[in-house]
Length: 375
Image (tube, rainbow, N blue to C red; front, side, top):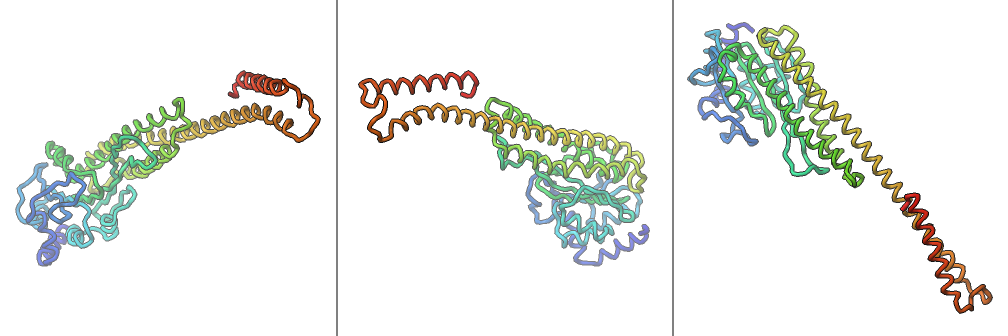
């Protein structure tokens, strides 16, 4: 769509009451940056709406439609609109204002998407999976280790729309960090896309370091003196959480490779080199996750081997004691038969002799089993 077409569309949208009410949210309500799990206390999905020119925040005048009109009329700067879990109704006007593709809009509202990068005309749509380490005192079979969310980014030549899903991943600190470097932010919306990608991948590495501590603890417990008594559910739970982390990290490789190597109109050439650096960090994260997966398999196999060895030792002990108990059982069984004529049956010292024979036989068997380490 041409610039003139965009301007006509923005002007026409100003006459649509429903869209105008949605677009005015950023102006009529104080700007709130959600750093907590809850949605906006104002009852809206709009987190922040800021216009940047030459890398610096400009004063807020008018509503979102006016901000977009000014940016497109001057041909300088861009608008950054941040949303948190918007509904279809809340997002409809924004999608029409920025001419967003319906398929991308549906993905942004519904969430639960794999990391990906798609192009719709002049708009770039990127999906990032965010991760957060869930603190816990002790890893159990039901412990949640990794919590995931999503950040969707619509990128145009004069706008950035970010849609966040989940209980973490606030972009407020990232926005402040970008605003502290106007020179970098002046390169356009692709700077925001790089900053988000870098922020997400850095969180991957942070979470991986925390998961490694849980793995070290499980490994220590398994190879301790009583490692066979470790609950295998802890290992399976950690493996499931690692799989959740893997689903967030691994699919992001291809989108970052495209951003780093392919020519994309809305991504400044100067920014592509930075995407290569992010891609390198992601490769490190993928390698660590693959190593963790193999290590967990080894830990699980070692634990199962310890359980098998412990069961064999228990069976040998049970067999040894059964053999020892068999001696008095056999002798008592013989002398328990109801016969009148049996050796030593009426002998004065018969009882003592039988008890002595049983004791000596049991002692000899016990020493034999101890020597062979069955007891």
